[in-house]
Image (cartoon, rainbow, N blue to C red; front, side, top):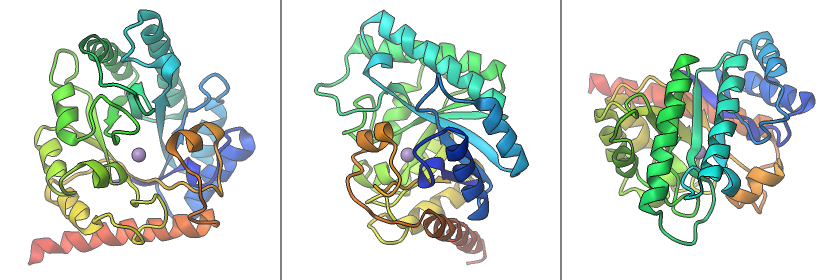
Length: 291
Ligand code: MN
């Protein structure tokens, strides 16, 4: 099991200086892996990132939230095609960095929608994801679709909703990405959805976020139940800490996620605490086997 941190804990920019800050900071905090959001697909230097990752002996994953211009649930085929082209470039970046996962809101735009999905829009999204999953597999990459709350997508907002979306041709290899921040808003509890998604063989990626996206343990997320569930199902995939504050700004991602206030100032202290919190939590639940 690899424990990781989202790069936005350290930087909102992904030039050489930003990449160094994220990769070296993640390593210094004690993590095994860094998740890099590919917000600027055209300007991203994947070879440089790969070199820095190897120098620091860190594993990598990449994530993305699509926008209205690249929304796979659009009824306009030109927009869907633009989204597919962009995600294919992301697959190339992941491969160049030596990663094997592309996750996040890659099946729709990451935004507050003003209306429910349409049947045609969801069909467009599922067909595009099926084609991308094949291209990903050719590069040794897995796609994992993040379940987010109602203000960030309208396609599905629960683990079961994601399973229903994935029930179809060409989607066998695609997994579900659960996030405690979103689960805390939408799910009945943080235990059963882990079991439901894992029982379907679909649990592929996990984000650990507090209810206000700040320090772990200072909000209302029931991490005890979540860690117990991960242990129950013998989850072995990436577990990645996600936190945002106006102390680190990415104009695009911070604004989309509504990060308006400072929940912390010190990235290094936040990350080192999260690394300990996650490892301690997962360590403790392993002893439940002795009870
Ligand atoms: Mn997340």
